[in-house]
Structure formats: C-alpha cells, structure tokens
Image (cartoon, rainbow, N blue to C red):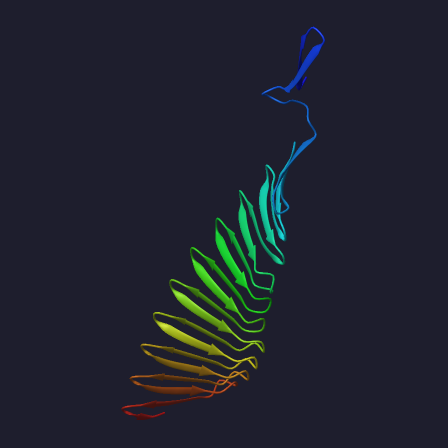
Length: 193
C-alpha cells in the first residue's frame, strides 16, 4: 500500500506513496544523535538527556531530573531538586518538599510543614504546630493557645478567657471579671461592684 512500482520493460522503479498508511512507527535521525519517533499513539523527540513525549492526553518534557508535564487539566513543573509547581484551573501549588504555597481565587495558604497561614479577602488565620492560633479580620483579632486560653480584641474592647472558664471583659465603660463559678466583679467609672 505504501510502495508504488513502475515497470518499463525490464526496468522497475520503486517509490513511496505521498500518503503512508498502516505503519507501526517511523524514526527520523539527524546529526548529533537527535531522533524523532512517530507512532500511532505518540511522538517522542530525543536530544541527549532531553526528551519530549507527546500523546493525545499529555505532553511531557524531561531534561535530566527536570520535567514539565502538561495536560488539558494541569501543568506540573519539577526542577529535579524537590521544587514542584502544580497549576490547575482553580489553584496553583508550589512546594520545595517541605514548604507549600497554595493559591486559589479566594485564598492563599502557606505552610512550612508545621505552621500554616491562610489568607482570604476578609480574614487571616495563623496556626502553629502545637495548636496555637490567631484569627484576624477587619473588625477583630482572636488569639487562642493550645491550652484553651483565648483573647479577643475588637474596636469596642477585649475579652480574655482562660481554659478554666475565668473571663475578663474590658470596654471603654469599664471592666468585668467573672470566675469559673460565676462570681463577678465590675469596675466602672462610677465605682466597683
């Protein structure tokens, strides 16, 4: 099917058809060891340590330990030293093997493997490796430690609560201290009760 034969008496002329069909593969080589291999399901180009493999589903470029894999849904770049950047339509994640940064349209999360910081348009949340946290937004800031103690500060005042249930509220008009059993002491501009 791929060969045309012309006969003129005792002379035969062989030639390839312009359109080749039903072939398993074709290998093309150029000076310097560069090759391109075309198969029914892929194209592989090689130049030393550099390899480009293309299929209907993905394209993968490799240069030694470095690689870049692209599909219709994602792109993964690996520098071969543990640094990887993964992009999909809804997020981008960069990691060095320990530290990670994931960004979406609505948030950004940084992690060093133990501690995390997540930011959105309206708040910022920090959490450390032992359970302490700090949540802040435009109107307040709340600090919590792993023991269960909590401090919340906003424009009107502050509330401090310990794990035992003791609470202190401070506002511009005064302060109220309440212990875990419900006993209360108030300090106001007019006096103490």
